[in-house]
Amino acid sequence: MDRNKKETFITDMNGRLKKARATFLVDYQGLNMEAMDKIRGELRKVDAEFQVIKNRLLKLASQDTDSKSIEGHFVGPCAIAITYDNVVSPAKVLIALTREIKTLGIKAGQISGRPMDFNDIKKLAYLPDREQLLAQVLSAMQAVPTSMVRVLNGIILKMLFLLKAIEEQKANG
Image (tube, rainbow, N blue to C red; front, side):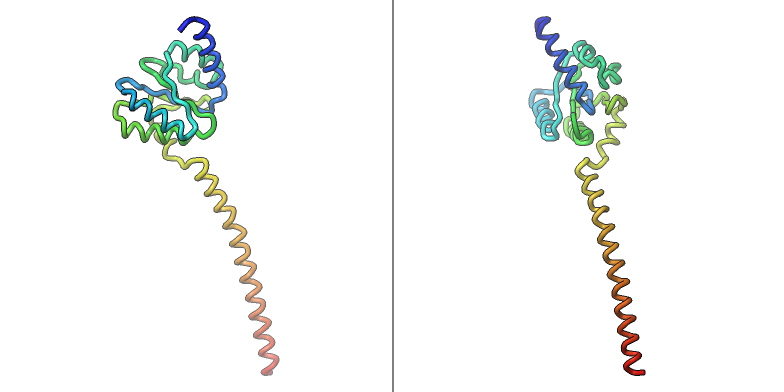
C-alpha cells in the first residue's frame, strides 16, 4: 500500500472509529479464511464491521477516538469489530464464536471510551439485547394500565353488588 492509500485508509478508519459506539479487538492468529468469513458474516448480521488491520495503522487511526483507550492491546495479529448502534449483539456473537472457533481470541474492547477485558465482554454478552429490553419495558408499561382497569372494574362491581343488596333489602323490608 503506498503512502496516499495509507493516508486515505487512516482517515477513513478514523472517521469510522469516531462514529463507533463500541469496538472489539480480536486475535485472529491461526484462523483460516473459512473461519474469518464466518466471523465477518455473523457480525454483519448484527450490523457490525470486521476488519483485519495493521497495528501501526490502527494506532494512527485511533487518535482522538474512544478506541485509543485500548491502544495497549494493539500488539500481535489484530482485527477490529466495530459497531455503531447495538453494543450487546456483537459481544454475544464474538463470545459465541470463541466457543465454536477455539483459536479465536478476544483481546479487549471499549464502549464509549471505557476499556473492557475479555471477562467484561463476556458479562456484556449475557445482557439482553436492546430489542429485548424494549420489549420488557413495553410489557411493564402495558401491565400498569391493565391492572388499573382491573382495580377500577373491581370497585365498580363492588358498588353494584352493594346497591343490589340495598335494593333487595328495601324490597324485603
